[in-house]
Image (cartoon, rainbow, N blue to C red; front, side):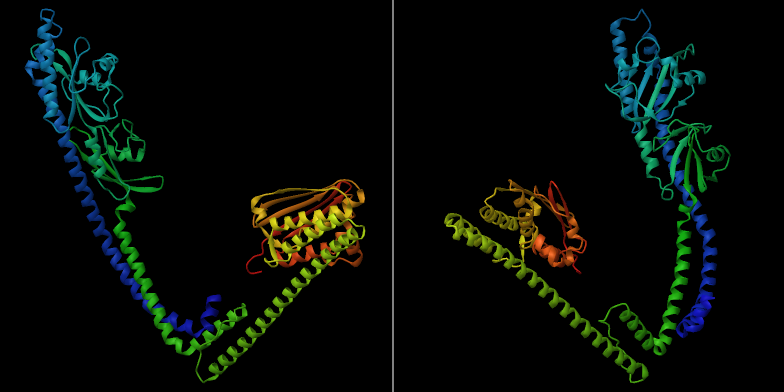
Length: 595
């Protein structure tokens, strides 16, 4: 209903909507046909590409595996090497001959690995007697294992001369420490060709990193993976991630597809549809590739997106054409409406640019004239408010200075009258220094550090005036010392603390001032050990009565006015007073820029 009313009440929307519908219908129809035609074509091309990649990878792995079995067959069929292995346990053979045999076997094994790009180590092992190995073979490591308990030995014995393939593993017979190099072992028993009895075991280690490099270079989608399983698909023999090496296939849906006879298959795991491809390697194992289907159909997704963007582009063009056609009728009114809304939100800098001589043009000119007059009026009001604030600030400053000066000069007058010239000189000197600091060169604002200098000079004057000891204890951090405050902001508090709190007690007075920097301001606390007063007098401090001024002095009025005019509205003055003294806490927060 809302959409209907919107279409009915706006001429521009009617024009644009009609052109949009006319343009979108054929665009959507054509885009759908293109998508359906491309869908099957892309799927066929993806399948062919995946098959070719897998075939090439399987061929490369078969070539590497063949290099291992070739070396295995050469060692197995070497008659001289067989005889020397048999002679190792013959007591009639001298030690010298056995040493020569050992050197020969080792040289044959080393020569074999040097002749192959993929074979990294070859071992001829026996349960008893001497064992031989190429390269950095370690007899010590051999002694630490029970050969007949090795799974590959059991399987080689069972297959009685056939090659036995094991999954990717680390070499445990070479080097001084633990090996971190991966190898793919292929093994078989070594026989006496005359008696066909087993005389040992041969194991060839193929370069595992080379095999992993081949699989890592394969690309199947963005996140597709390749791995190798044994002939029964019971174990993963080669896994580039090494996370599932020599483990079973845990995804049952995938395992079922691998074990069937299909070269290509699809399965679903955790709600995600996968595409898989299988290729047999020459040792009976299978190379498996798995990838989410949506990654292979990325081009199809692009076609879909192109179709959608095309429809969207046509829609945008239709909107633009409709807008151009309707603009000459509604653009002046729309512009004036927008400017009126902006002015209603408080923006009085807006001006309409409608210059026609018709009714809309006349209305636009009158609107501009009205906004200009409102803006001028607001500027005048703002100027008057600023002038009023400046006048209030001047009044505060001129009120506090005569008050302070009156008290001080009165003290000096009495000192002179009673011939206490030395004290009068000290008081006058402090007063001159005080006036120089508080009324000198830095204008309305001074730092807390400078204000405390005023307080120190003021306390010298008061000690002379009352002939009573007053101590000032300061605990101000560095940031607070540099904080700018109105001059004579702290002095009236100290004056009231001494005059109304400490002097009546006729004992040594203590005034403690602490200052700490806080977020966007400072907190200053002034406390004394005077007699205190009734804090009800401060309940309406912003409108102090004449009677309160007589009790507390006009200085507190200055403090409240200064905080109100100079600092953020949330700044606070908290006064707590009791028998143990009075504490005044000032929370001074910097005003926001707009204030």
